[in-house]
Length: 428
Ligand code: NIG
Ligand code: FE
Image (cartoon, rainbow, N blue to C red; front, top):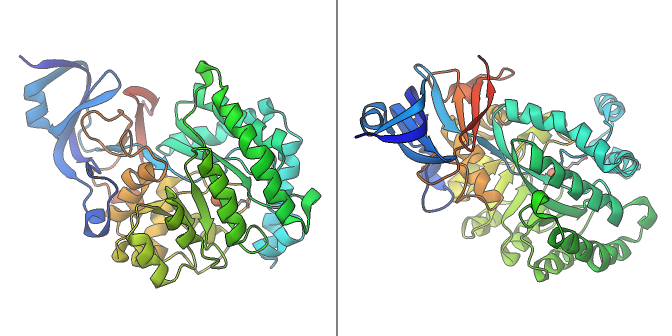
């Protein structure tokens, strides 16, 4: 007798599992997407029950909701592990300044950039932040992203940093995507502390971090959110290596997991810091030298590369994701969606960029957007692949070969989205 499940997706041209029961993928394993031709997926109670050939699953399972996906691809929902998607306002004027020759760092040094979004965000209520962010999350979901990390860092004072976290918690409880929060109070030095970076670091350590911890511990059950990460922008004109170390160690002392923005413009040793502190991820890596890639390869820290930033800033220099993969580093990709350096909601576009400018194969870009991205936010055991017992976050793509996702750009092949086994978008 076939077993009854809630949903059976069958007849897929390809099922892309990205399965990796032993942890994130590295090296040649990144070229293996776990492809099953003529495949099927069985789902019950929001979880994946079985993945295999259509012949096998039709023999073993039956469902009230049987969905024939002939000529389509089934794959895991994409995971976007590095975003700044909660903010107010926009940076359209700076976009034009950059088109006329000003650099991102020049605009930032002149009090624009992150600080211009800080001013708009400080002036917004939690409700406004939620209202401005929700359509951006909707765009990300429509493009196949079912799990999203979101950073604070546009408040740079305690009340606004907490308001950003509150907005993330509220969006998490009613948006279909699962959200992970990261406290990035050390994103920039606010104007009140110009030329007093050390004093601002003390404020983050003494006041903000304990306030974040207290906020998280006192969240009502209906707003429950996983433990926030602590992140720092380790960069010239932001926080140096010693300041970054102090900030991250203070977060670690509170039991919070760590992330680092490192090597975006200048190499300040953020990669070795990430490895020394056991950070879950180190992100950007545009100027990371080969010896530090080797150190990263021997660690459990995931490298998150963000090619939409370089593309958006008109740069021809990208993080060398090819060298990172070849060195044995577990590589993930992410949009970094934010109003300045990457106003990009699309993981498929990021995959397209990673293939063209960072020399990843579509298979590597796919694993970097799913299973490795899930590990970059500590959710590798729950999402990021189609494996028995995992959350049923599943996409149906309107193509018969998964490589189309990176091959095409500017469109959207995502036809249906199942979040915890429930359909959240249908083209029908
Ligand atoms: O990851 N590098 C620092 N932070 C963001 C940019 C934020 C902004 O420009 O508003 C990033 O690129
Ligand atoms: Fe960032």
